[in-house]
Amino acid sequence: MTDTGYDLDEAYQINGPADARKMYGDWAPTYDESFGAAWGYIAPREIAAILRGEVPASAEILDIGSGTGLVAEHLRGLTVDALDITPEMLEVARGKSLYRRLTLGDLTGTLPIADGSYDAIISCGTFTHGHVGPECFPELLRITRPGAVFACGTIGPVLDGAGFGSALARLVAHGRITPVIWRDIPIYEGASHAHKDDRGLVMVFRRV
Image (tube, rainbow, N blue to C red; front, side, top):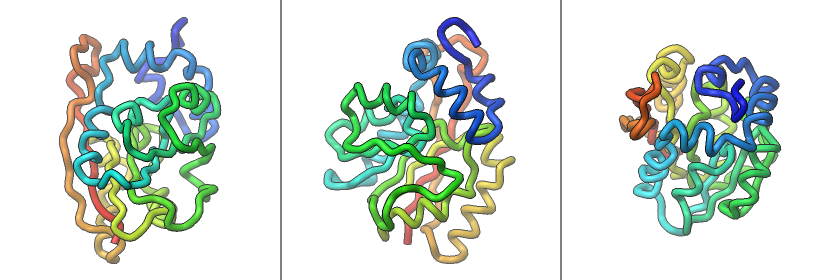
C-alpha cells in the first residue's frame, strides 16, 4: 500500500468478501484520485455509455459493486441505486449525491432487495480477479424485472478462468437470459503504467 492507496495488482490479490471490505475500506478516501484519476481509468465511462444506449429514461438501475460512484457519474439524469460491500466506499459516494439509495450488501449472498426491483444492472470492476464470480447471477435475476438489461464489465483472464462463459451459457440454455452480446472497451486512457493497454469485455444481455 502506498501513502495514497492501493494499486491494481494489490486489488487483484483480494480473496473473498472480508479482504474486499478491508482493502476498499482503507482505500476509499483516496480511491478516486489515486486510482480513478491517476490511472486514467475510463472503463466506468465506457460501460455507462453502453447501458445508456439500452435503457429508457425511466429505468431504475442498480450499480453493483458501486464503490465511490465512478459509474454513476456518467449516468446523471437516470435513477440509479448503489450496492457495495464496503461502508466507507458508500460514504464517499453519498457525498456526491449521485444515487437515489445506497445499500450495503454482499453479492455472494442474499441481497436485502425485494424481488423485481430493477430494470437494469450495471457493474464495473466487480467481476475481476479475486472479487465476485458468476455465482451472483441467480440473485441478480431475482431482483430484476423481466426484460431487465445487464451491462457488466470483466476482463479476458477472469472470463476464461472464473467460469463466466459456462454460467452464462447455462442461463441462456435454460431460457433465463437472452444470448450475450460482448462489447470490447478500453479500460485506461492517456496512461503510461503497466496495464495501460488492458482491454475490458462488457457482457450485455436481458433477463427473460
